[in-house]
Amino acid sequence: MNISKKIVLLFFTAYSSLFAQQSWIRINQLGYQNNAVKNAVFVSLQKEIILENFEVINADNDKKVYAGKKIKSFGKYGSFKNSFRLDFSDFISNGKYYISANGIKSSVFRISNDVYNGTADFILKYMRQQRCGYNPTLKDSCHTRDGFIVDNPEQDSAYVNVTGGWHDASDYLQYLTTSATAVYQLLFAYKKNPAAYKDEFLANGDTGSNGIPDILDEAKWGLDWLNKMNPEYGVMFNQIADDRDHAGFRLPGSDTVNYGKGLERPVYFITGKQQGLAKFKNRSTGVSSSAAKFASAFALGSELLKKYYPSFAENIIIKAEESYKFALTDLGVAQTASNVSPYFYEEDNYVDDLELAAAQLFLTTKKNEYLDAANYWGKIEPFTPWMGADTARHYQWYPFVNLGHYLLAASSENKKSAEFKYYLNKGLEKIYNKGKTNPFFIGIPFIWCSNNLIAAALTQAKLYEEITSEYKYKEMEASLRDWLFGCNPWGTSMIVGLPENGDYPAHVHSSLVALEYQQTLGGLVDGPVYGKIFNNLIGIKLFEDDEYKQFQSELVVYHDDIGDYSTNEPTMDGTASLSFYLSTLETSGKINKE
Image (cartoon, rainbow, N blue to C red; front, top):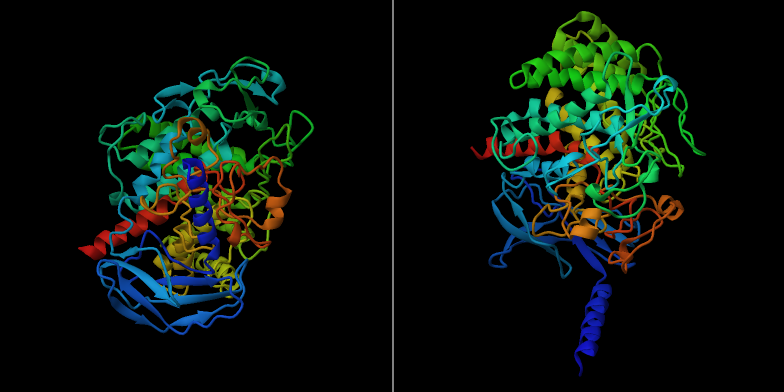
């Protein structure tokens, strides 16, 4: 037999073997902390199947160490004819294991309090990779000519220096909306869990130690850019470039997309009115959503960076108060702008941004008028509207988690804290009720960037538990966490590179993967979407045979394919939004180990 025929035969045999399998056991590939809620999900394409018990097996010697009887049947889910939830929470011994049931074995996983060690710093790899200006991953500079002002008649086409910040995803657009949110998430994570973060990188992202925790270096990189995007009172910019950027895979230093002024890119002035330079327009109604995001990021940044950058901290606390003041001058949302396609960030709420800005300003300045304002704005939107909903438009309710509610609920100085604890509970309850009827306990709508919603729900669940000592959402929280690490229909982690030897996205939609053959380590991919959404998106073409074909359904699809920008593209803000949750798990694991 010649070599080419042998290769074809081997491929056909492996392919046939894959599709001969009818059942699978999905687990958290990264592992479980000792006293955590531990569930696996058994899924099957078989119409009739009975599952009465399962076993936990020691992976080192294949000996049974636990006999499981806690099984709940859920029937059909997605492409599966049958599904079962397996509970082994009361097994707490350290070690490497796999689950066996009905002749099916799961992947090997660990039980130990240290399974999340290093994860909080690991996702910062992706943040550094997304840096604009100087990029430490590529050791190259990019977009150093940004940019020229648009949508401001008094300064039309004038140059403004706004180089820096992060690219939003695998494209090179830059948005105030997502960048300010990411900055706040990074700062919040450090404030809550400072011991989780190391100092192994310099301020510019190169390897080295500068006496500053790496997460603060990353937040400072974002704050420097925000400072440029708000050069003076009432002058704010919302984004750099637009969807003309979507011109194929290329490295950032080789970006030659021409917006009419050579290598300069357009910088969109915040007008408070509808924007769009061509056919497609957004629905902006005011300045509040963006101006308030500036305010909250500047306020927390000034508090945490004054030890390292005192003059910078003094400058940005002034800007924080000015930004909040400006946010009140034209109430409404400042959406991102598109040009050649109908896709943009369709943010429709702003009271959550005003609430967070006012709450953070109160904590930073101790001025009571900010506490009163935060309580006022917080009552208007008791829970973020995507919670409990079946669907939503792209980034319609953003940020996906309202940290202002937490600040007000946790504050001993707020006489209305109980009210905000109730709001936090209400949002979680809505997610809980939608998820409790399916085997994965997933009550998240599968809209574009569904993984970001999961990160938001995890954050809210953990914070609610912290301030109330109530554990009624513990199983839901565990299920949402496990979903991100492989306990999902496709059996894949949603974070590139975690765990190192696991099944994680390898063919993500990224120029780095396409041209440099490097992984986007640490990046949280968009995540699965409803089949209807996927089938109606423009410009998606799969490059390879779908390895997950058996697991796709009208309900939900996910592809580990470089051509699928809707489910397999990492996002900067989604990745940053995992900072608090992962650092909390890492910190608690170290405490419990001691």
